[in-house]
Image (tube, rainbow, N blue to C red):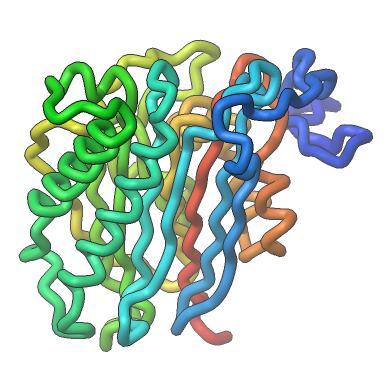
Amino acid sequence: MTGTEVAWARHPNGRWIVGDAGNQPSVVAVPPVLVRRRPDVTLDGGRVGMLDYRAASLRGIGHLETGKPRQDSYVVTVTRDDHWLVGCVADGVSDGRMSHRAADLACEKLAAELIDGLAAGPDADLEALDWTAGVAGVNAAIHREFLHTAKVEEAALADVRALMSTTAVAFAVATQADADGTHRAVIASLAGDSAALILDGDGWRPVTAVKGDGEEVASNAVRPLPREVEPEPVTLTLRPGDVLAVITDGIGDPMGSGGGVVGRFLAEQWAEPPDTIEFANQVGFYRKTFMDDRTVIAVWVAPEPT
């Protein structure tokens, strides 16, 4: 903020405004006509080991006013021994009327594959995780769902993607620290433009490629699942006090690499784990031109004792 400029404030209806809200506060929600039982908002939050997490997925302003369902999805869970927090976010591609199901399937299959791959608990080898098998499982699940929905026995991959396709980024973080106080983690952006960033004492830094850089209009070109992918997972360590945010482009487009007003807003709000309901409100801020669904899983590593 400079001078008397207020970069973010509460709207009278309780939502946050970051910058210019445009006409977003006046949008009246139209019920989703295709998927009446799909909720507009899903939330989770909790603590496991030395980690706090919050997760939220919101139907975007654009879908609220057109009657499209929320096409984003997420899964956040823990391994059977509680040693690993596992998550995935996915963004169904807007043109496909069943892409919300593709996003659901991607998160379900990738989280299940990670849980199996981390069965060794503290001794799990993050470099040995079989991401290719996870992608193959997602592709197969989406293909089966298409055949069932279309009531056909065979289908070309291009036809499947036209009806249901999705981005995906998945991760795992150790819930307990190693001897040096850090937490092992792995993240893989498997398709499209969902991303991951870390907030530390120096601000946000991207872990995966970030779509756009907070521009007013960002490119919407993606290469979604189902397709053949050569995963390039990133292994890293999180330090006490770090925050990992795994996001779809509904957050990624206005946030960019985190240095702009949206990044500063979220850094201030997420200095500590917020109440789960308030976390969803923070994710649902108004900002002119940015109207897509928004999904975030945020993970806080417990700070060092003082």
